[in-house]
Amino acid sequence: MPRPPKHVPPETLGGRIRAARESLNLSLAKVAAERYSTSLISQIERNRVEPSQESLEFLAEKLQLPLADLQILAHQQREAVSDTCHDKFTEEQLSVALELLASKRPQEALDLLSTVSMAQIQSLLRWRLAAVRGQCYFHLRQFLSAQKDFLYAVTERPEVLPADQRLVALELHLHLAATLRELKQPNAAFEQYTIALSMMDATTSLHYIAETHWGMSLIAFERAKKPLGATHCPHYKESQLQLALKHAENACILYRSIRESLRAALLTCQIGLIEQESGKRDEARQHLQEVLSVWTPELEKRANAPELQQRGLNEVANVVSAAACSLAGIELETENYQEALNYVQQAQYAGQMSYTLRKAEASIMRGRVLESINILDPAAESAFRDAITLLAPTDRLAAQIQAHDALGRHLLKKGDTKVGEVELDIARSLSDVASAFSSSSISVEDETDEITLKV
Image 1 (cartoon, rainbow, N blue to C red):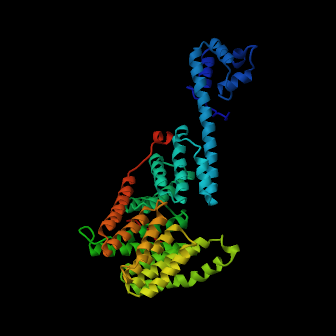
Image 2 (image 1 turned 90 degrees about the vertical axis):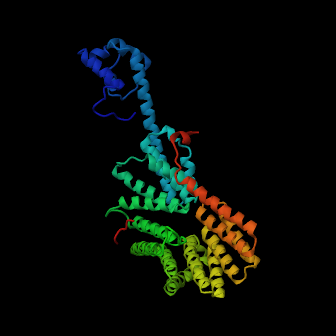
Image 3 (image 1 turned 30 degrees about the vertical axis):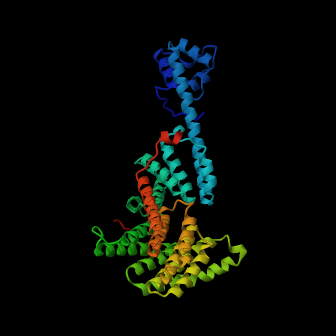
């Protein structure tokens, strides 16, 4: 049993017994008499030991207390001890789960946490459990489940946190922001990044600051690419592109300062896309070709050396695929179709060693290039469908929407109006799914069945 505080609360079993003894002016020895030791009575009063039914009956008679009252207090004490032990066990599970996440074993961490019931732990632990479980889903790219846990954690977390839990809260808002962005909820994601920035200070790791700037850049860039309309004028697009570039440059500088060269390379790709959207194709092409010149040889080195393949091969391939795919887009704009196809081929090659998203992006780009060369080329439709097939088992709603929209528009251009409209309807329905989840939350009952930082 845990050691109690020096002051024993009067509403506890021990406090009630002590108060009764003192009101009768009885010493511990007088109460114990010849039946119990004074040490035992003292420990009962201090809630260090759980009294037996026999000793409860003895104390009730000796101290003129209702036995029923003492039995209720004893039951409450047992429950409190049980809760304390359960919470301690949950804390240990959380610690192990975090270690598993750090070693890139999210499924094992999730399996461990799945044995814990939210309803059986105190609220101060519930939000942390949900936050860590959400991280497991996030790393497994199961974004809908991640969002559910993150929203619950945000709702449950107290406003005032002890110092050792502030980092958990910061990571929670960053993960929720990234999840919302993946689920095509840019405004909600931007709000979460803003909250995260407000929680940062001089002691915050530069990695977190860089991550926040990166996310805000991606959102501003997506806003800038929206079709011009009543609410999106040319000035709005320009301002969003400037905001996206500012955040991307800040993030790139920060990643370079902490020697995270792969992330800095991805930010360079992002800067290239922003420059392309701003009409600065030559600058964009130069940035992207610089990335390829550095990382393509590294990719070949790792791909051909078995002892190096487990050391970041997929991350290097991720950078190469992203840069090549972006360059293909630039060449497509300038109608250099053969050069665009060459870059697509490079993007697909690297994508096979990278992530599903990169493979799908390369397939979509291949479809766009092929349809520009010959709208009737069946390989174009096949490329779009390949992307849809790749993304179908995932929770990457934004990418799924893009793939179905690309196929739908392609089919309309070919004259397959009916089938094309079906694909566009799927894209719209996926957008509705994303919107529906934007206000979702989880309860304990459910469980049981513009801000910038100078650099």
